[in-house]
Amino acid sequence: MDLNNFYNNLSQPVDSSQSGRLTLVMRQVFLKMTLGLIVSALVALFAASSGTVMNLMYSHTAAIWILFLIEIGLVFAISGAINKLSSPVASLLFYLFAVVNGLTLTPIFYIYTGSSIFKTFFITAGVFGAMSIYGYFTTKDLTRFGTFVVMALFGLIIVSVVNLFLHSSALEYGISIAGVLIFIGLTAWDTQRIKQMALYAPDESLGKVATIGALNLYLDFINLFIYLLRLIGNRN
Image (cartoon, rainbow, N blue to C red):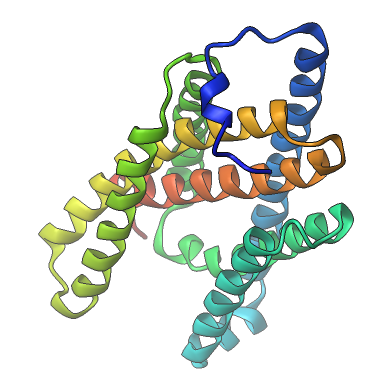
């Protein structure tokens, strides 16, 4: 699944066989991503309604860090070893990641009102859908744009770590705005990358393309949702 030559084919017409392959893979990508979001939502709702789980998370702060490290490990395992994993194992790791992420999302139900969570979710879905459609249909090569956005993401991470010590509300607000803009851009770029992988990857790799594509878009959606929630969410 080498991407080096994919972007040279952006302006080339898609024949009927490629169109069928593209439709099949993209359908799998969005189906897996949607199922992952559903799994995370159900896990978060269950954990939020369980006093035992919440007491464990709040009384043992190390639990949050452990979950976070497991998330990072799963992302690297799926992304870094995708060529070595079988398609079923890659899918299993993706849904395991969705479960763990659902647990880490649980505190939002105590921080924000239920109505603002659902409102923000639907706003996120609309924005995400619009940018994903743009990334899918545009004939512009978003490679340079994607590189810029990824660099901005690293900058955002650094500033966020710094603000853990500064506790600046103004900087937090700026971080949230930047996060929204960055993940809007990443959604379009990732969609275009997934489209090109679906068109030009070997047939035996298409299941893995669907999984890695679902993971990337899942992460874009969740992060966009979190940053929007910080901006417009009503706190309890």
